[in-house]
Length: 194
Image (cartoon, rainbow, N blue to C red; front, side, top):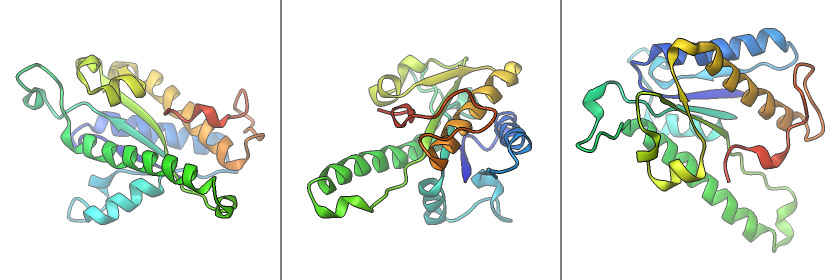
């Protein structure tokens, strides 16, 4: 299982918090190994091919987004914070969610529905408290929870990420199985999207 990190390559503070959350989880749960993937760190040339990156996103168990841009240079004339690269990756995942929903509906009317699984990752979406989340499109601001954060409170970030990892692991193991450090079984209705 692995966590895909989608954020500005200059936001090493955020990336480090995600890595710490994964490493803490691995120390506390020896029976499950979680890895993380951050595209700018993937290759010697500073990145990977776009097609390989899309495959990584689609194979992820959890995608942690930080919508915060590199700097104030990425604010438009209305004061909206924009990180276009992260929003493109979000669009890939959102499209996959729609495809999965429609495919499962179609397959539910056929005999094929019994063995087909389409992997969709859980989503965790963050935005610096310096940006206004109300300025995002209704898809982001209405259908998904955007969590405001400040890097001065790293423990809050780590807690959010670790809780989502535990929920995903519990789901992957079995809907009725829990890890020793989790409070309750994970239910399918709590995937982080509607």
